[in-house]
Image (cartoon, rainbow, N blue to C red):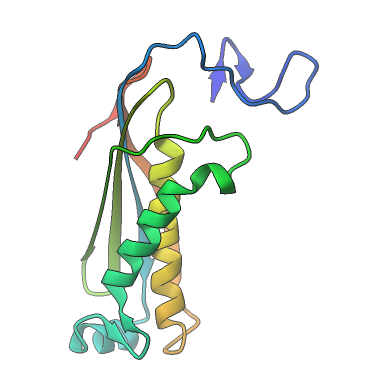
Length: 162
């Protein structure tokens, strides 16, 4: 994202840098992101029949735990993310059509910077976990798109929170 026509994670000498948020106001901030997991028809039918259970255990339950853990550790994965106190994290996973799971991750904090990256990380790691738990059935499982659905609480709100 650009600020005043410049990338925010590049300093005036052109080197990568963490954004200084010390002058920003502490506000309630939230973000919601999603990632889709699309299965081959036969795999989707098998997963529906099993109630989304695999030999490794409950797929949805495991993906929710993995996504939540990822939200809390985003700053360890993305170099310039600030470590944030996470006030809330909700991951919802449901069928969207016959062959696709929709994973939505909503994150809240009260801080000087937003939680877009945390929401995106939670949704995508949950999707990766679904893939991991189902890959014995097929390697033709497709992840994505992953996208930000909305954010609020900073300078600019975006999208619709849900």
